[in-house]
Length: 159
Image (tube, rainbow, N blue to C red):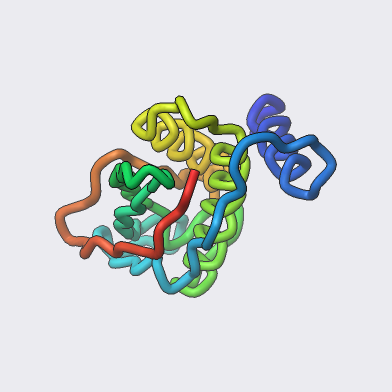
């Protein structure tokens, strides 16, 4: 992991420990490991790192005014990485949930009543990508979901 990525990940972690001042709205609810229903889309065939799993979440972002925006997260992680070795589904789910909640708290606590929900979704996806990529090398979070995944619609997050 390069120095910039490491600094961003540490900064996200620092903000969530309560060391930074928070403004904006508190995030209610959280993503759970069970929300990340990974399916193997590329089987691991070699003894080295490889294989690929995908999960799909449609997270509704809602304002108190009733405005709702569906934030799509196509989450991809390797089956095995050179950094962690074999990554069991349960570990991928736990790490994904932790990284998503870290990103959500960081991004959504800084939103204001005039922040566009689509922009908040994009910022959330970008922060989630940084956090997850720092935890599991090669992971990614896309705007679209893989065709073999089934979307999960977790409890509403309020930015």
